Image 1: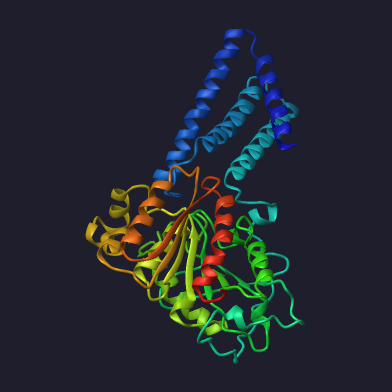
Image 2: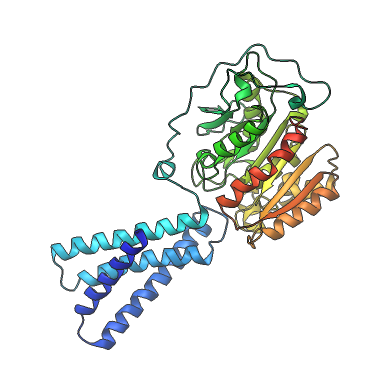
Length: 422
């Protein structure tokens, strides 16, 4: 319906433009100039956002640029259609028409990435069924010595078969990093009296992005509830912390002037989880995963802090932290110090060290041509460094449809790795 409304609005604007100019060649020339202006504005805005303001590192797909250009074309058309013979009524109608084209174009861009399923998701509002973070239970069942937890656990009949969502501020006591609210999924088994000691999955969103993205576009609740229903109420506790600080910030998951995100995720977040949630604190019970920027961040944490996160899932991440290219990254974040970059760069660490106790899943969309070479490079580097890693491709491109499916697909492997299921 939105597409139809935008198409009607565009036709009306073209008719108004044609009626304001008598000569056919003048009409064609004016439309050509407007189209050229839209193309120029699209290119300039892309360069400004990516290269100057550095709002995101990825290049925009052609289809996204097409819809951005359509939005600029609609606005320019509206201005051109009313300026020669301005009337308040005509101006108001042109404003409505341009707004329709803008909203429709934005909706199409959203459709490419599947980022905001609803208006509530776009506004970043918490789910209506969020619960208050429950107090940590003092007593829990002893950690299993042999066999997976599922082999000797059954969900008490009085407990729900669905998990619960909650939120919490995780302070950057060590890092000084100022983070937004974290989102937390607690499986049904967590509410048993006493609960089993459950493993932890730290899950990271992309950039631009926020923790809420995994709940909305990532369909985290649906994925985890399906899993717990098949496994007696068991799943990892999923904590989705903020890994950027704001929607468009890009701290590259490093310790730098952009924010000490590495220290936040490797020290502050694990310390807070152990202090406030009843979890298994054993080193092999923790994993990190993420998509796009979050996938790169998961790889960085797994290589820089293998003792904290010996298991990781890298979904459509880059092979290294980047602001678009190596030169700019080293210059802007490391002050031109290439050696400092190499000391924390995953590929360099994988070449220098062995990781026999670590395991990883590298997942990519089959049509994600921009990121697929990086995924293959990471897989080869991790296996060469002794990690038990595997590589898989899923149908789709660099969007939340693939990210969500990747987590659902890899969750059984992750649960076995964390000694949760057989």
